[in-house]
Image (cartoon, rainbow, N blue to C red; front, side, top):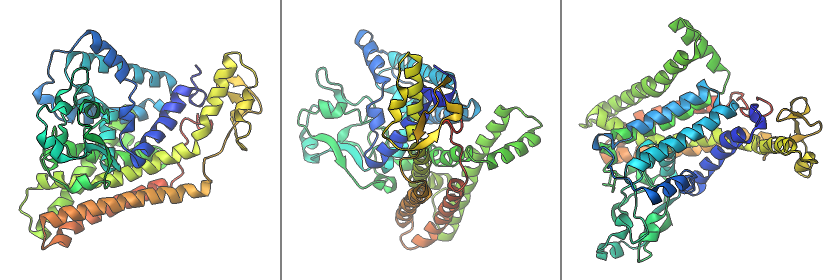
Length: 448
C-alpha cells in the first residue's frame, strides 16, 4: 500500500482506531482487547502440534522486561515516527508474531502475556480502574471444590495459564479476560462481574499469582511508567517538545535524534518520577511519623498514580479517536481505487461535510472531490471532555492516596496524605497544560 500514513489502513487503524477502542473498552468494561488478541490464534495452532516443555525462568518472573519493552515501544513510536510509517508499523506486528511464537513455543503457560507483552502490561495496569473483573460468584463453592479446574484445567479446557487461582484472585492485574477459567469451572461459578473501579488499588491483600502489591516494586514501577509515560507521550505531540529537544541536543553536543530522545525518556520516566515520589514519600514519613522505609512507601503509593495516568491516556487517545475517526474513509477510498473500483466517493456520501484531503489525493491517487468528515463530536466539546477525563482520574488518585494514608496513619491521615495530594496536583496541572496545547494530528491527511 501507499507509504503515506493517512492513505494506508495499517497506520490509520493501528494508531487511531485501535488505541481509541482499547482505552474506551478499558473505561466501560475491562481488558477486552487481550481477550480478542489476534496473536493467540497462531500461538494456539502451533501448540496443537508442539507442546512447550520449559518453565519460565524464576529470575525473570517479574515485570522488568515487560516495562523495558513498553518503554522501547514508546521510544520507537517517537524515533521512527510509527504513526507515519506503514512499513515500520507492519514490522512491529511481524516482530510481535515471531516473539510470541518463539516464547510460547518454548515455555509453558502464557509467559509472553504475563511477563513480556508491552501492550499487555499497559492493559493490565489500565484495567485496574475498569468496572468489570473475572471472579468467583460464590466463594463457598470454591471452598468445597476439590479438583480446582479453574487453575488446572479440565479435559480439553485449559485452566488459567497466567497462574491466577480464582479462589484467591484479587482484581484485574495479569488477567487477560481469556475466560479459560470460566469454561474450565464445572460449577459455572466464575464469570465477568461488576466491581467498584480502582478499589483494588488500596487493598494489600495477598493475590494469587502476584502476591502483595506492597512487596512488588516491579509492579509499582510499571504503574509509574504508565502514568509518566502518558505525560511524555502527549508531550511528544505539542510544539514545546522541539525547544526541549534543541536544548538537550546542545547539552549533548549532537543533532542525532536517538540520544536526544533517549535522554528525554530517562529524565521523564526515571529521574522525574524518582525525585517526585521520593520527595513525597520523605515528607509523608516526616510529617506523619511513618516508620516504613522510603522505598516501600514509594512502592505502596505508586499505585495511587494509576487513575490519573488512565485519565491522561483516555483524554489523549479520545482526542485523536474523536477528531480522526473518519480517517479510515480516505484510506479505504484509496484502496478501492487501487483495486480498480469505481464510485469511491460514494463511501463518504451521507455522512456530512468535512475536510478535503490534501490536493484531492487519497492514497497517492488523484481522486478530486473526496473528503473525510469532521470529528464525531463538535470541536468545542473536545477540551471540556479531556478536562473531565483527567479530572475524574485525578479524583480517583486522590481517593486511593487518602485510603492508603488512612491505613498507614489513622491518627495523622492528612499529614500522610498531603504530600501525595500535592504531587497529584502537580501532575494534574501538567496534564491540563499539555491538553491545552495545539496537538499534532498524527496519521491524518492534515499531518501525513
